[in-house]
Image (cartoon, rainbow, N blue to C red; front, side, top):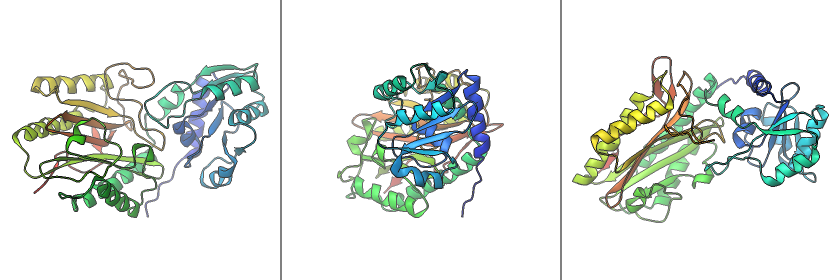
Length: 387
């Protein structure tokens, strides 16, 4: 049994201190990552959390889920909504805290990440109508900053989640052959990971991302299809699991048969770039410096026509995209000036897409240590060669 002891009291105290530091009386968080971070439980339905600078934190969820979340999470104040809207319920909690005329944070913005959970226009209007004296300001960076550096317990859970996904890959490696379908591969992976303790398959990505042949070089491959694998093809295997609310995301690759000369060139560039990303992810460097150094390496080797990347965020349920590993500043997406520090975690990634030849994808959770880093998945970067 893998046992990890979290520190919810410390986490909630840090969240409330950050709300106060931002000059807010309370944060009304609607993003999935914020709700998860605050309550420590699986919240699949539209929910919100009221985080006052002082006072008790409240989870607001559909009434049908309130009892379970009170039992499984660490927040004792769980309020269900049904006839009243979620924001009307949140406003009532704000009024109870005597903050109806205060400065309140909301989570506004946009993201390519489907279940992000930014406040909707209808929700904003409901909140503004219920709290006409309040000042509503965007406070979404608060939780983004708090979740960049992981707690020790979170890292232990992430290590287990990565091990579960590695196990799924090992199970898939045993059954790869011409004639099997992408959907069958996804099923084998899902069963193996569930048997090993996975709690959730990230349904917004199609569960398990499996692609073969021409589908590997499209850049995205969700969901797995009925396509049958054929000899000579690349096979992209991007598996997802969850353990203790922490997300396991490991992408690996295979080649059915000996690679052609063109395929071997793609594999060479891809594998070398994977190792270079790990080499560059060191404490004291900025995310922008890592991205520039890796891109310069790719350009020097003449691989820029088919290699790109180099990573995105990773963490607990809902915390999967911010920040991307780039030197371009994009609001709500990247933070190139962020200096890597111990316990910062990145989902490093490299993609190689060469139409007519094949595509490869590497994704691995990596945590920064005092003197370097640790790649949590123990799979090699080199693809499986299935003879």
